[in-house]
Image 1 (spheres, rainbow, N blue to C red):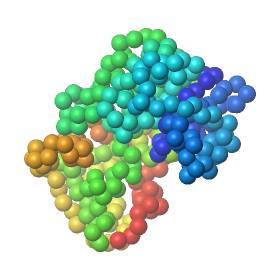
Image 2: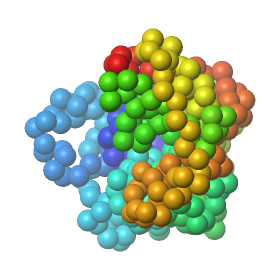
Image 3: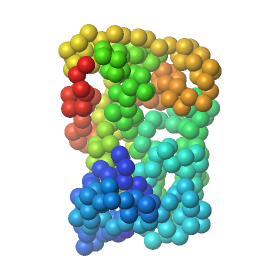
Image 4: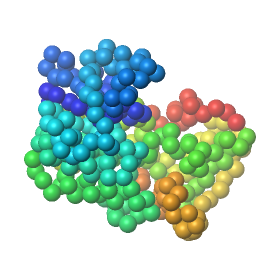
Length: 304
């Protein structure tokens, strides 16, 4: 892997770049990040971009949404390894578009944006319609043998579990509420973006080489009941607990079929493909320390 391209430098792309830079030797490999031209010229990003330059990271101007597949093929062709850190915010169709361009460009190795749940287990036709495109990407990769691929399943970003808009942990009302999606014994796997960057770098450089497979990681797998106890402990306040059943979640989605967050809630309430045992994770098997939910909460939760 002499030339590596990372797509995006956002919440996941930034730590991905940092950990990949620490893994490679600039004398034998290059690391580049694809950024929109307006990002490269944005004064508010200058300090961040200077930090990347200090790590010998180069910039490739490009816009996934605005570019045709043929244009992306031309951008991707020079690279041996492409790691996509552009998630669903890139818009519907972007994941399949990126994958198609990677394959047509003949890139040797590819890590698609699949840093989330186990789409194979969830299957097609789930409440979250975006997930079907993730299965399209897996089908494209599995149908060919020229480009090696590694899919890294990480579960939910740890921070998303505490997003008040998502509704599982709500500290915005002056008191603590924790909602159990589908029941208090239901579990969810979470990993921080920093740990995803660290573990992806380890996965890509591990020997024997991992190829054409799904690799699982986890900061922690936690039940909603355990999460409620944890929030109570961290905030030193009594937590109000609400159980949101699958049926209630589906009824709300029926009332507003375009509610993206409600689509996620239904999938997580159903509890299929959204959690896995720590023992099966790459980090547990390699004894790589990751950040659990309590550690994240202690550093990031503002007490109510």
